[in-house]
Amino acid sequence: MQYPPSSKIWPNRRSGTLCGLLLFVQLSPGLFAQPTPQAEVPMHLGFSSAMFVGINMTDARNSIKALTASIAREVAIKADPDPLIYENVDEAESLLRGHQITAVSMRTSEYWLLRRNIAFNRFLVTARKGNPTSAYLVLAREGSAITKLADLRDKRVLVYTSPSMCLAIPWLDVELAKESLPTTSVFFGGLVDFPKPAKVVLPVFFGQADACLITRYAYDTIIELNPQVGRQLRIVATSPDYVATLFGFRADLSPAFTEKAVRAFVALRYSVFGRQTLAIFQTEEIAEFSADTFGPSLALFDEHARLCPEANAALIASLHGPRPLP
Image 1 (cartoon, rainbow, N blue to C red):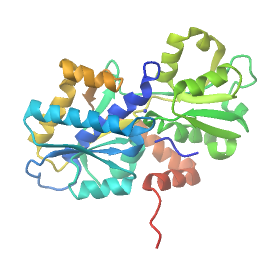
Image 2 (image 1 turned 180 degrees about the vertical axis):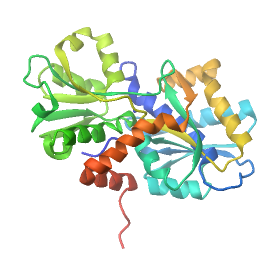
Image 3 (image 1 turned 90 degrees about the horizontal axis):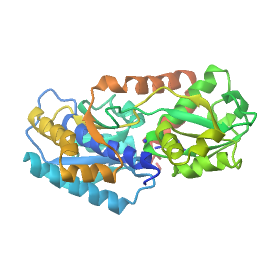
Image 4 (image 1 turned 60 degrees about the horizontal axis):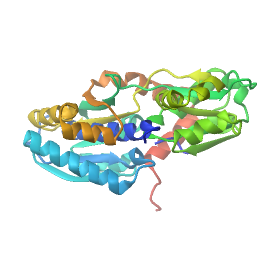
């Protein structure tokens, strides 16, 4: 199983995409660590390809183009509306260092690596009622013998794939390590990915799978529409709250330029067009948060590296992507 790259019933997927989209715009302004700010340059957004899991790429590109063009008009800044989509952190770093993108939308796992070589100074995150975080749940059927993580040895676990899930497997690895158990790739009998929450939760509900791993928000949405599901499922484990995706601006951009862009994204909720755009991505608002907001998420990856070195090395390799042949 690869590490997860965050509809009417399943809003979490698109919410994670928007969060990444917004975060990418902010990363562009402050992306490079250079002592002297640059003159204003056209806003050009970059996005991790992992932000578009289960999303039609043509629709995503068109939405980003419309959003970028609208923001450029609103705050009178130059902009290249065509997004650059990168495949791994090495490509993202190259684009940032080459000043080809001004802000980037990414998973926190990618930021964990990129921040070591690239400086960002302003950040945007999608939020619900002012809360940018999400938690993960391990669910099993009520009445089953599964009451704790240790009971899942050799069991089949379904995993919701979404940008918002990028910390889920590292969190589980760490929890298992604390109980002196193997990491997820060895401990479970199988991990099966699905891009829709229903495909993850309902097989457990019907007794067709042993357990599932999903975001609390996606699960709460399901049981709000189908209360019976909630009555028949048991929460086996719950993670802390984490920020899974973000949008960051390069630190070497003009402060005035970055301020304009940030204000325009935050103000989306106040205009008809803005609310329509937010609705497309199934989120309520885009808000600015300080780098401290990502502290627990970054600390998890650090702990993962310390307690689960082999699994962490595999995670890092997946973030860097395949190496070119010699």
